[in-house]
Length: 61
Image (cartoon, rainbow, N blue to C red):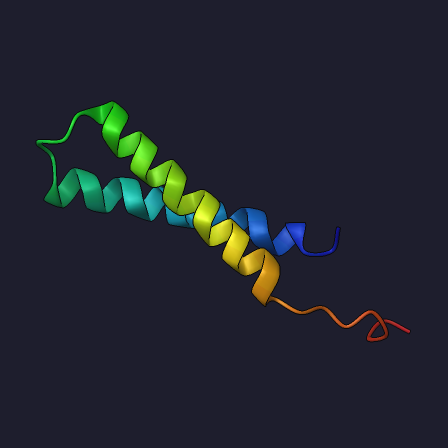
């Protein structure tokens, strides 16, 4: 549960940046397609950050 305060903001940042980049460079795409691509990018980055960030259980003792 200690990973979620880091994982959730990373996901939100990735979704916002993905939406901005898709709006700027690929505005001809339908809005639902851009939302699906951004959501997929957010979920994928959340999974990566969840598994790659290591938290030492003994660091707080």
